Length: 281
Image (cartoon, rainbow, N blue to C red; front, side, top):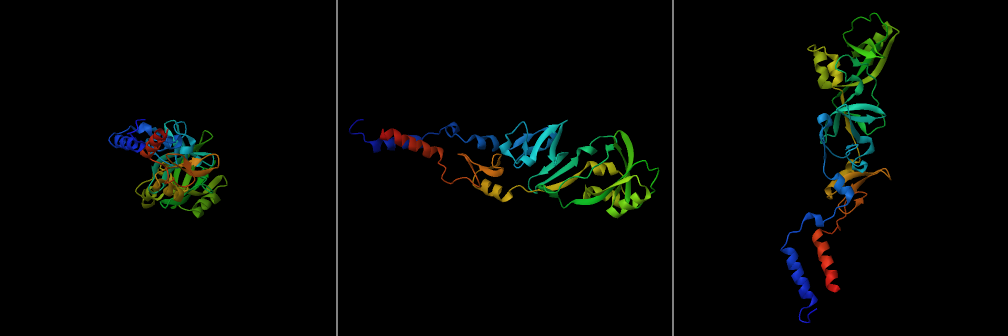
């Protein structure tokens, strides 16, 4: 090095050079967890739009991008989620209210729906949303007639390739009263439906029970909401550690348990440190 050109002078010109130039983002290498999950996935199946944590799309996203119980996949052009090994079609996702509208795959056929089963929601991250009303379903097997009841709405459904008569009852008492009229009636005591879809039946303006069932019901989810909020506030994106089975925060440098480190150096500071090493050498 020239004796009149000191290291400090060289450093000064290097910093001046850095400040006067714009460097491509490729110089800043983000951790692959962060890169793979930071942008919402556009899920065309089922027309759900952008998918964000805790949901993730099997076959299109890494499993650490979402919670394992919120895995979505496409089947016959339907967006599907499995809850306690039972398949549900996802109709809508509302990230703000954390509510999804789902329907059992049993009620999807356009003609006669498959006779419904009781949904399984206990001990899961999902709870019934406020707009859900618990009704009862009475399934008839080889009953010639059970008669009319003001609190029961008739519909037909198929099971084992046979057509059965069924009733959507306003409460358990009505369903069990129908059961007392014929020994071949099976009662599902708690069956969720949407209140807004029930209005037509209850006020007499509509008698399309199958349409009410096809709209399914809504559930509200919880999935480490506090940790995820803290993570996003620190500049990270929410993810899930499949090894420890805990949520984590995916950051530009690496994943953290709760939030990103404020000590993560910027691309500019990294370049400065690199130049300092060169000057010392």
